[in-house]
Amino acid sequence: MTEIVLGMGTSHGPQLLIPPEQWELRVNADKQNPDHWFRGKKYNFAELVELRRGEGFGNSVTPKFMQDSYATCQRALAKLVQVYQQTKPDVAVIIGNDQFELFGESLQPAFAVYWGDTIANIPKPPELVAQLPPGIAPAEIGYCPPQRAEYSCAPRLGKHLIDSLIAQGFDVAQSKALPTGPQGHNGVPHAYGFIYRKIMSDAVIPHVPVLVNTHYPPNRPNARRCFEFGRAVARAIRSWPGAERIALFGSGGFTHYVIDEQFDRMVLDAMVHKKPETICTIDEALFESGGTAEIKNWIPVFGAMLELGLDMTLVDYVPCYRSEAGTGNAMAFAYWN
Image (tube, one colour):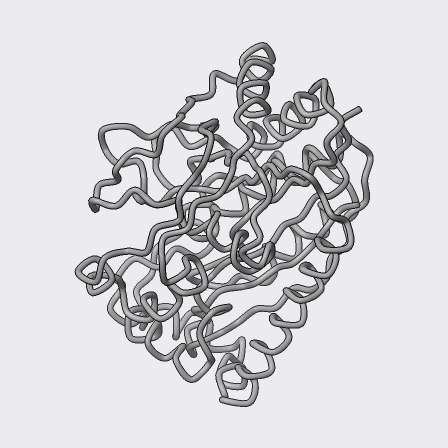
């Protein structure tokens, strides 16, 4: 009988993959961005500095503080790897998002399931790497190996998920081959590459990639829909007539590009203490920042684990500030087993 033996959520931001002395590269981009979302409103960098002056971020962006934050994140990641290796699942279902890496203006599904035989993780060509925002290119090695890698998927399980989700009222898109994205690249999105490289250590087990449109309106599923989707995924997996031990991953989040510890801790507290209504009623305005909206990759895992009655272990929450405006990436690491 198929059993879900592990749920896991992890951030995957570039600040996990580049040393703190390079975080300044992202600060330069922060200062040039006129549209920083914070608690449902937009601010430029100077306005954020003034708005959040009383929060004392100057103490959080010293070299030592940033180095400590980075080291804490690495310890948390190591714990997730340890839990994964000890659990030894046979198959994985990985919930992530696409950022115009595969889909673009011609097509943007709310939910999609990939059920091809294999999937490729392909390095970006140099000309595309050169176009990446400051501070992103050095992190690419954390999402993709230097040479093309191809991994086995679980197409029969993927087909079963599609059939079951459709029967449960989720009209998911389906794909057996990765499209070429708007930038001319057709490698797997970085949300999945992070799991391959940093959790599975490049020893990628057969898996089913599931995509959630966290970033692009007007068809972004809201928090309640993501929660119910996760419950449906759990029911679909449990009805699979195999004997595999399956892990379910959520990749991305928490608040960025402007960190909001109050919001993050509210979400994590609701997951730890099994408060689905707190999650399901989050105002969509709080997800306007595309990075923060990656929490919607965690919410289906939370829904699935609640369906199974499993408890969440929060390994750590680390707000990695990089400027006096409170910009950065809050990192969270958790598992259910």
